[in-house]
Image (cartoon, rainbow, N blue to C red; front, side, top):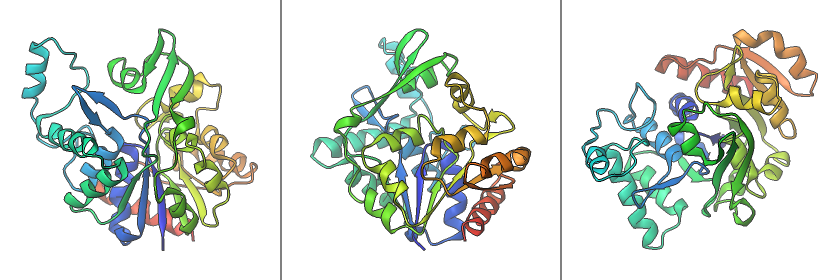
Length: 308
């Protein structure tokens, strides 16, 4: 059964690690956020795409969820000695991915083509699509001014209040080839447990994608990235608060309400199910914390069962 997953970084990668164990990976299409993409030292870095690929290839650093297991940082030390800022951690082996990607892009390949090849070179059978081949940059209006997402997230450790989110370049962007077709053909569409504003929200901002979800014939489900009033990882809880939304799965459901059929929340938030159902959205609870491979597999199985 054709399944589409809208994906951010670490949370989505964890869920996908379980999903590929319980269904044919060839039936999975991942639509990845690229609003976090940035350029460091002249190289194109795609953090969310790389986190998913590294995780599914069994290469990711298990402690952080991003970067490569056992990587070293000698190049970064030399760059620092040369006066470069090194707050964004790029390991020596990780740099090879970014060098190769930049080479391919400069030779005229699209980001879709490069991503497809990279996934195959890493031994993956599922399809990974960037949300767009055109550059879109997530920029945050904060208490200290405008910041690219990675500066807000990594350099400032998401400790700044956010007043507004801009998706620069979005008006000129098109969904990457295959994105709208995958959504239209899918029997199941799963919104991974990713930040609804700056991971999934960026994907939805690309013209045509939200409308495709609203018109989809397949069932659309979302896994809440908020558990017990806190984000599992990253700034989602702080952003919900900054924008006046409930810091709970209810706030996430409100963001997705125009296309969402089913909300999957953690057992800690079971009391919210009636409120979500009152919005016209099915809602169920289960254990959503993916603390082990078995937990990832179990959640993936349950999500597929809930969507039948």
